Length: 469
Ligand SMILES: Cc1cc2nc3c(=O)[nH]c(=O)nc-3n(C[C@H](O)[C@H](O)[C@H](O)COP(=O)(O)OP(=O)(O)OC[C@H]3O[C@@H](n4cnc5c(N)ncnc54)[C@H](O)[C@@H]3O)c2cc1C
Image (cartoon, rainbow, N blue to C red; front, side):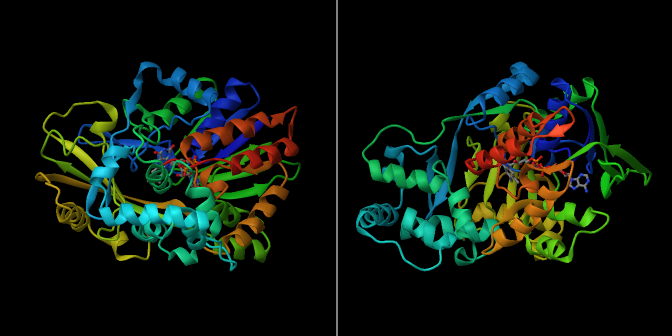
């Protein structure tokens, strides 16, 4: 089977690799960027590999996929202890959470409030109104954690009030291993001594993007064709079955490929707009109803060997607009360049927001000022680099399910194609989930057929994916 793969993020390159190593098909991967990895890519900056925001391979990764990644990366895949911290009501608490540290450091008002909420929960009753992100989280976490942690964090991450977000967001995103749930768990079990949460993660020496690069390299070696810098412009059903994919190359030349089957990992709303003939107006309306949050990533190169000892700093509070800051050197163990370190600040936003269009210099000043306002000592800023990503977080605004269902039904009824990946299924998934989807999709292909029943079963499995922070 000849398969056209739209998008060269982890889902796309994972599928190409799987198609070739299992011998189930030929693969043509179309990727708009001149690199693979999508949001999970890396690039070189000032002599260091940096990621698109904090990325780590979580130990929850399916063992088969983890073993493939280990095979592709060998000794370059590091097993690293997690060593981060969270800024909560003016105090720093370690992540993974350590009960004693939490007891000693947590703001007493917050700790007492959260513990009282635990007691109230035992006797409390659920409200009977319509469920939203706000009502579900209040019931699960209590008022204190919602007010001081998750609600301000949610406003920054998704740009909406907690009452404007769907209950699905709470069920899918605030999983058992999410920080607020763990805080609650720790406070509920005091005086425990064991750290709570995964204490390690995996990270490739040359940046998280090495995972996608190695999948892509191995796929190409096994015969896959990778069309980098090729943005898909149009997708047309072929007269005798299959698809015609047309893409614009880096120098304006067009590439046209006919395929028996298509895997799309593009945002599902983008796919609808690329279709020729256009889908029915209801489908296009539904595409307009789905929103994706964007992000500005601000990299500060600092004139110092290290900024701090921590891999990531989480900022759930409203006092600064950035949500997280990560320091690459503390992920990869790399100590070069000796006199420089780079930190990456994540600033979620919409393309309509002022920050999206701000100059690099102003964004650099904003981040440095944010950090100083939290009492952090910021060494001399030797350079600022900014990346803007349009499609970052699917936004589960109330009623989004209606729009997604229309698009999902439309895509599922198209012959010879399947949509998956984080953007293709509008899911908040991690990289190992995107890879799991690609393995599952290839597993459904056989004898010139795609096993829709088996895919439906996989879709139910994907519902249980737990997103790790
Ligand atoms: C800030 C941040 C932190 C994260 N941290 C983690 C983490 O710690 N651990 C983890 O496992 N995951 C993490 N993730 C999630 C991870 O990035 C995603 O799960 C992963 O990138 C999803 O892969 P994908 O292939 O489904 O989608 P994407 O990575 O979005 O890839 C889609 C690809 O399609 C391409 N494309 C779009 N339109 C076109 C077109 N018209 N023509 C051709 N190509 C096109 C895009 O350029 C992109 O390369 C994080 C994500 C973000 C944003």
